Length: 313
Image 1: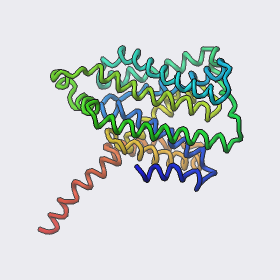
Image 2: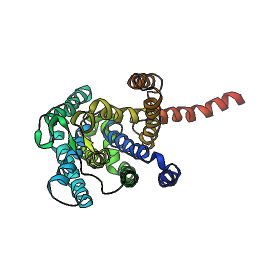
Image 3: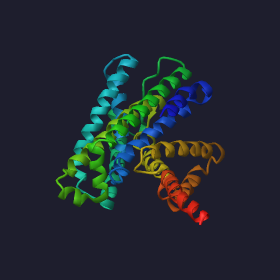
């Protein structure tokens, strides 16, 4: 943890030209960690978490535009309201959809981002299909990049520390029990629906904050390509957690770092073919590393003593 903190502080000093890319890295870390609350720790694979990110994008931007506050006050109020809106949406949607299980739940969540993108694309109050421009940051580009880098780094750090504490308490054991055998957990008296909704609210809280920051950092919110980009951000959340090893704390962080690096290389050297290359990467991950990097490391550690014993014999 200390090494990660040191790296986060040193990165903008060592690579000042890459501050924006590093800021997006921390955004990816929040994506992966928040998705893993449901998909990894609880075994509910959601493809609709992009809904909360998009709500955060638009809520923060609308507050900044309509309340007449200065940039930083508007951003602070907008982020606070975004978190509330995200949690409220998770409560409302969760009660309706978290009764589903397995593939039915995954398919049900798939429509959330699609429906939200269609609604936003036809709602002129937030720019409809033309998108929405966020307020201009009161400073030069380098200062803006460093500002949002610091905020996204802090958000990723808080998310990591909070989830680590959450997984070590009764809540973590409860959602793991739901993942392992939900029927048995219910038979033992566990109020599974309450835990499932709470887990989704936790994910929604961090994703909504990430959306408010990302919308301002990008400077423009498109309903389909930014806010409710299920085909990109929505899929990446899942892919990064799976790549690193879902159901672990460090797996999503490692997966996000590797994915972001590979993505930047693809977009730089395979322009025009980057989505094809990314699709091939997804296939390779699923086929050769179904348990992710952390699972692969566990298998190597578990197999090492056996191989040493065979060698001694």
